[in-house]
Image (cartoon, rainbow, N blue to C red):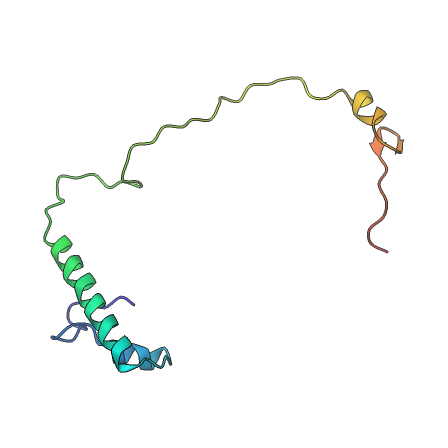
Length: 102
């Protein structure tokens, strides 16, 4: 759930409210635990908002990657006659397979 600063209650994230919206039944100890965890997450996000990122370029990943795939090269395929020689049944250069739908 994305909440703007103006939509967030002044005392933090209201777990009971969100649980009601999601139709979740939380015990009091679960509510208290989630409340604390979510408030920690929100304070971390608030700290991240203060970081100066004006000189950084947008990126897709956190680390540089390199394409490790081989380059495309044309290579000869399997000879048709050799492939058809292994087929139990073939006709007109095509594999004949059992019908699976009637």
